[in-house]
Amino acid sequence: LTGNRTSTNNPAPSAQGTLAKVLSSGVIRCGYIAQPPNFIMDPQSKKISGVFPDVLEKAATILGVKVEWTEEVAWGTMIEGLQAGRYDMIGSPVWPTGQRLRVADFTDPIDYNGVEIYVRADDTRFDANIAILNDSKYTIATMDGEAAASIAKEDFPQAKTVSLPQMSDLSQLMLTVADGKADVTFMDSIIAQQFIAKNPGKLKPLHPGFPIRLFANDMMLKQSDDAFRRALDGAISELQNNGIVDKIISK
Image (cartoon, rainbow, N blue to C red; front, side, top):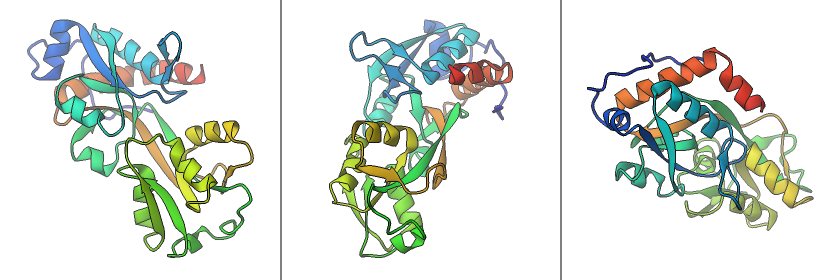
């Protein structure tokens, strides 16, 4: 990947907004959501690791500052905390969906997630033609404001939906299908694989390796925080161009 924005490694201290504050304090304060393997938090030691922490901490070094993992946040409240100034950015992966782009900004992508279709393990109804899902006799498990809801609306508008609150754990979408309350859901393949490993024989990907959507994994910033975004993008681009991001992902 290569960034499409440019920045110097030593932004001028006169820059306005979050960048000026970060350069003055020497610290980037980050909210985060644990999402292995991109963002891992050990439940015992609370030690943070993974692709995004490693990339961001190296990017911060390029900018001459440090990262402080300030607050663990939730999907439904992370933008509110960002706007309120409780942290400077979300340092774990966030998909830049249309709804979020209306109220926040994003860095260039670090990596990508495929969203696949999941059904019960013994369900063969959609094997030959997923288009038949676009029918009111079928139900899709979705979550308010998340990818499954937008995919259902865009691709299968005739199907019914059972919608979970945004604060719900994403695994609840899988459980809703496994329990027979919905026929299908759409899920990040990494999260889905973790659910299937813990609940063998319950669900399966409809077409393994063929995602219905591909989403960029970005870090989220306040809207119109252009100087800060350009500085981060410049540092991330440097790490991508010298192969460090690839090495971190491989690890």
